[in-house]
Image (tube, rainbow over all chains, first blue to last red; front, side):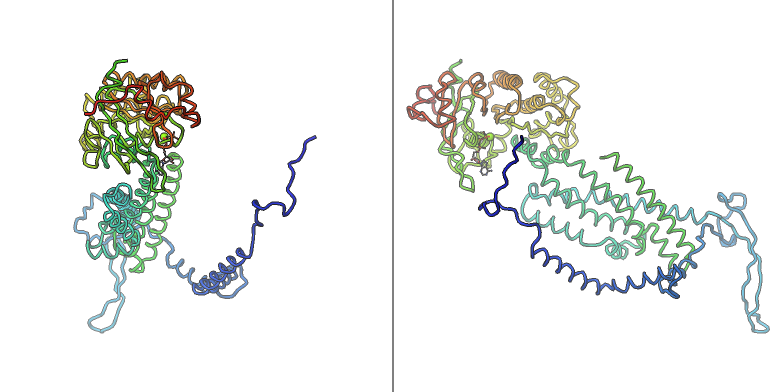
Length: 340
Length: 274
Ligand SMILES: Nc1ncnc2c1ncn2[C@@H]1O[C@H](COP(=O)(O)OP(=O)(O)OP(=O)(O)O)[C@@H](O)[C@H]1O
Ligand SMILES: [Mg+2]
């Protein structure tokens, strides 16, 4: 018969014992967390949020009579619907217009235009109709949005390129075991923190003042912020890289840069690619937003239309961004599967 | 055994070398040793005896706290270290290859101290250098198909062959081998040591090799140095390294005569000072 391993009698051991898993300390921690949640929740009006959302749900289910949230949303929805796909332009205002060379899908239409005009005799406003020739491009605005979307992509791409170029030397100086001295290390780390602490949108705001409206400010804003991120992570990988190949090269006196290039970079390259891919992904998303402060891309178009109350156009842009991000998610998931 | 290998002019001088780590460990104390050019000197001793520390003093990977190392008469200092390191190759227990880099690139990296930075960064090595790498890889028993393989994908024995090829790229005057066969099987261990010894003999290279295998030490060493607790407790030819000496070295027991003074005398290691 099998003999069980004897269990020591309670209280018989002096040196070995396992505590019960919970103690007063854990209760105190839970109480502290609760207090913090209640305080911060009140300051951020979380109670009101829950109330308003419940009200909205009630309204949708036909229980509540009124909801501020539903009213606001439906007002937005009605003014944004339908999305605008086409564009019409008055031919008399198109200096380059050629009747035998119409753009794709476009046709010329005669439209009646009614205007209120002052009758010089009666001094009264009278409706006055006039027929104008217009060029109708049924998907003209879709094309415009598409081109802006491509610009957005390009901003993200160049933002990433700038980030990689800037972060490579930064990482060298910010890696404790490669930085030439303490001063260069501190300076590089400080600069990285500075870059990381400045949000893209705010940096872009200032860069627009420096470089004017358009993609330059966007590219630089994305690039600078991401350079901080990449610099930090590249540097940490250099510091944590396997020391063995580095020692082999140090032993023969290869010099720091060559040791880094032959002993470290090949080892950390997979992580570098992963970080850079993450930055590209992040920049693609940020590039859609950064135009809100005038730094180019689809965001700038969105801001322009929004300010002119052209909510139909805004809707088209939002649809485009949604499709863009959706495709991006699919692609990045697929690429990630390939890489790993 | 040619006499000069045992008694020749000293290539490496350890003069009263001592090393105390910041935590107080005395890894080396008062080591004085002269190693003639072309000698295959095996260092034996239990773990923690200070073998690695001693080897690393030769190329300045470890800075002694007392005494100094001279190579061909030149004292190893911060100023001379860079020049001296080019003449000293190292073979490591864990091969220390860049595992994600190709075999060819690993071997060529042995040239890095003499290759210009642009060439190094672009990997555009001179054709004679590339031929030399191929020749060495052939010599250590690898096939042309291995050239483009990732070093980390090779077996341990193959990786150490790459390590040897890398070490000999710069025609070193000294090879430091720190337990080069510790993680290899007995047959391959012998092959690897044969490779190191033959290549070294051909070029009259001095080898300082730490080992844990007594039989290999006796077979390959021109000379055996036994270390224990940072001190030299045996210094003689393989023939003098009897089984009693072995057990004394590893168990620290029966030392009949104080070896530190007796052995070098008996072995004829009193060297002509330069
Ligand atoms: N970086 C270090 N800091 C502090 N102590 C160290 C350091 N490196 C080695 N030591 C100590 O120095 C002593 C000698 O170590 P060393 O590595 O030279 O031994 P070894 O003879 O090579 O041993 P093994 O056969 O296990 O490789 C040991 O006591 C070790 O703990
Ligand atoms: Mg060791």
